[in-house]
Amino acid sequence: MKIFRSILCAGAMAAAAATAYAAAPAGFQSSDSTLENTYKWARDMAMSYVHDGSDPVGLWYEAALPGRESFCMRDVSHQTIGACLLGLDAHNANMLARIASNVSDSKDWCSYWEIERLNRPTPCDYGNDKEFWYNLPANFDVMRACYGVYEWTGDNLYLSSPVFVNFYDRTARDYADRWALTPDSLMQRRRFMNTPEPFDRKNGFHTCRGLPSYAENFSGITVAIDLVGALKSGYQAYRNMCELTGRRDEAEFAGRRAEAYDRIIENEWWDADNNRYNTYFTQDGEFHRGEGIPYLLLIRALDRPDRVEASVADVMSRPWNVENLSAFPVFLYRLGYDDVAYNILTSLPKGERNDYPEVSYGVIEGIFCGLMGIEPSASRDELATCYHGAPDSESVATDVPMLGGMVTVKHNGRTSTTLTNRTGRKLTWQASFITSDGRKVTRTLSIAPGKTKTAKSK
Image 1 (cartoon, rainbow, N blue to C red):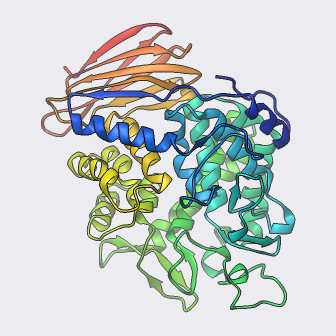
Image 2: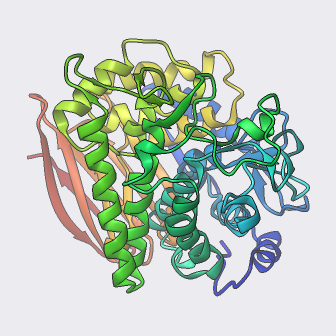
Image 3: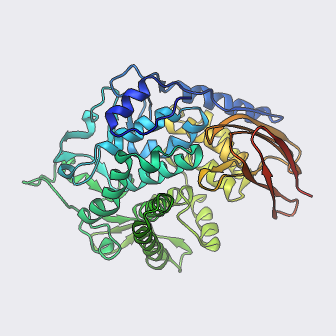
């Protein structure tokens, strides 16, 4: 796989991407035929959205409404790990670079919400730099996704490329200031900001230029919990990347910001009377309920176990659209709700709007990161595994692309796991097992490149 190195501009990234190719998708076999069929459906559906680099935008996969021939900042952020598992590292790098390179002062440090295959903003979301659609969590969601792809691939492009570093810095400083997203101004911000003159309330490109949520169907929102969660996780990612590159002052600044947003979530958004989080805050100074909690569970923005448990009960008490449901398998498996995760994972291929690209990419992530519990960390030279399948089942993930190479992980029920390391790195392997009484036990092993080892629960 050709990887981008020492690329100094988005144009160079696109040129490099045009000569790159996709690695083979990770393979999956299981004694559970339903899981195997779910994987095959998701792999084939996801790969049908992949484009070969012949379009002006370069290598890309669809991450927007079907038929729009575009990739959207929100959807890309939620499909990148699925794309890594499908061997689409070069596609991720090109698409994320296109997004990062298009932030500008004239757009108040927004990028383009959607970019189409012709390498221009998608017309249904963009008129000009003063009139366009934009959801404010997007910059921080993309920053979180970039860090996640770095941890999966080990590609230093995401840490050192000037295009990405400029995007992170502009987002953490200028974008947050321009849109009143700093901790001391967030809860006092106005509904409409940085509006065109004259402002036309009947023009969606005026009223939706800076929506404070991914939710688009609730009037009067000034702040939403998904925005606060995106801010927290985005600054955590920025802190981690600054630490890795020796930018100590910026890392400390980002860490303080992340802690401040965590306090806002826990102190201002938690509804103790109803044992749940509020999700919208409106211009009338009132909290309301709607979407947002599944996103916080997906990005790990909630830290208190009792409130995480309450939030899972909250999200399971109502129906959801596929944009939300596509994330349920990975976070439910991660949190130990294995039966519920399985039911949702295996039902998504048969559900309504299953052609939405995020669904198949979410199923891929749900299988490998959720069911199989595979999670690499380039910064720590570490790999975690934990099987969430049935105790009497066997599943194997073969040739999983990560860390500049591949691994194969075979779970023999919940009692033993075999790992083959072909990454070129010596890895610390955190092999976890779920016991019959629901506890998690972890064995720590070291595994050299080219070696195979087996860890056992006892």
